[in-house]
Amino acid sequence: MSIINLVREYPDIRRDYPGGMPRKLEDLLLRICNAQNNEVLHIFGGKAGWGLRGDINTNVEPDYVGDAHSLPFRSNSFKLVICDPPYSDHDNYIVYGNNNKLFYDAWISEACRVSSKYLVTRHIKQFECPKDWTEYVRIFFTLCPNRYIHLVQLFKYD
Ligand SMILES: C[S@@+](CC[C@H](N)C(=O)[O-])C[C@H]1O[C@@H](n2cnc3c(N)ncnc32)[C@H](O)[C@@H]1O
Image (cartoon, rainbow, N blue to C red; front, top):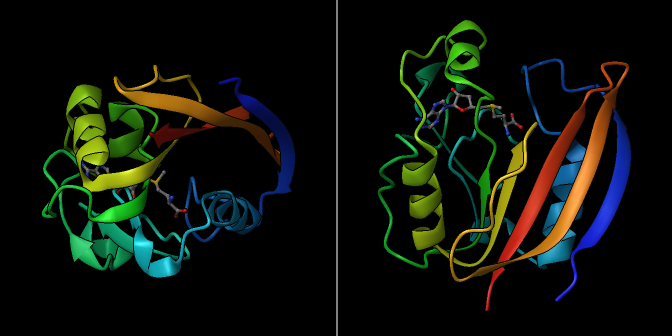
């Protein structure tokens, strides 16, 4: 299956939280996945506008406090799992005040386990498609006036 590539530019209006996902992008993801609010999990939740938000940092008042490397849910519990991690351990400390390190293999396998259908990552680098999943859509976007490119990858489990 070929990958659908989309390019977008969004105004950087989420200044309430560094690295906040543009609301219009959140809406687009919901529409593509045809997911309802209660079918969505954010494992690096920050101040996302929808779905169940988990975060290791209590300051963001998440729906649950938890570590993305070990999720407190049964397998296949959510239709859509969003992974919007800090871009590095350094950013995690400097920007979000967290001391924990990030281990891609651990959090992506937890995200795959609890998702029954769709998985989204957002980063400044490209992730490999998890085993047994298919990469389905890529959204390249910039936040004006910041302008460096972020990549959202949408993976599907068939
Ligand atoms: C890029 S921000 C998420 C922004 C969010 N998508 C939004 O729209 O507001 C990354 C978040 O991951 C959280 N985080 C860092 N390490 C984590 C971990 N091991 N488990 C869960 N959350 C973590 C940080 O506290 C931070 O809130």
